[in-house]
Length: 205
Ligand SMILES: CC(C)(COP(=O)(O)OP(=O)(O)OC[C@H]1O[C@@H](n2cnc3c(N)ncnc32)[C@H](O)[C@@H]1O)[C@@H](O)C(=O)NCCC(=O)NCCS
Ligand SMILES: Nc1ncnc2c1ncn2[C@@H]1O[C@H](COP(=O)(O)OP(=O)(O)OP(=O)(O)O)[C@@H](O)[C@H]1O
Image 1: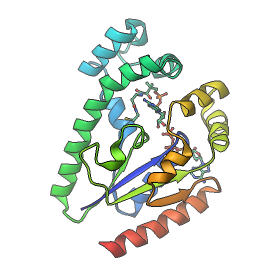
Image 2: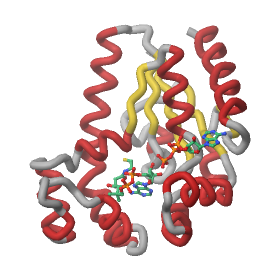
Image 3: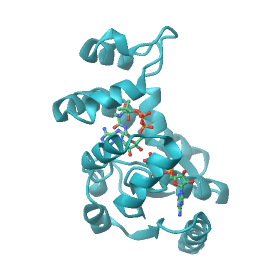
Image 4: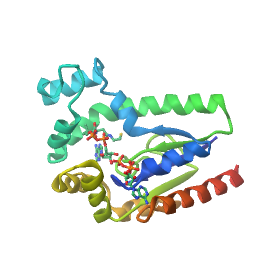
């Protein structure tokens, strides 16, 4: 098995890179998706979020109002730390299960773990219990990412900037990169770099 970490700042294009790698044959695991599973309706995680942040964040259908919680935590460091302490252990447990299952299904699998907070959680250097064969960083300037969040996701500009402020810097991510994908241009330019990366990975296995 080859274990690839894929990281990048918010709206850098990680998912675009991850989805292309999956099309080419990788097993893709998405930390954002696992973080949503950790607070699914009826879960112990969601009960802990409600106990810490209030029942008003749970809708009539039992699901979490993610936008409202985001508004709270990205402007309050202590609140974000509390949320991370609820969600991250469950994400770690789930990813360990999924990686083990992928390795069992196919010992030659290329597993890509898409993890926005690789640097922030110290996971770049084995803090997660994983040894990465390759760390891939999707890299686009913060201003480009703010513009994408506003234009493509309808996010308010100040909310977009708060999210970026709660993440590692571009320089910190670049410092851990084995492979840098420039995601500031066209999507076709991003995809072409991913295809070249995949050829290199296939040659290495
Ligand atoms: C605050 C929440 C509810 C907002 O939900 P929302 O649907 O608006 O955003 P989503 O989860 O899709 O995340 C989008 C992006 O925000 C950034 N982000 C999310 N959580 C964090 C965080 N704790 N710290 C810094 N950036 C974060 C990442 O770039 C992520 O890709 C949600 O992000 C959350 O539960 N975060 C805590 C868990 C976490 O750390 N998730 C990230 C991967 S483990
Ligand atoms: N060159 C490019 N590479 C990747 N995505 C691009 C590019 N140009 C524009 N985009 C757009 O930017 C957005 C990036 O979103 P994507 O979900 O891939 O990023 P992400 O890093 O996974 O975001 P998040 O951190 O919020 O999960 C998409 O809407 C994508 O279509």
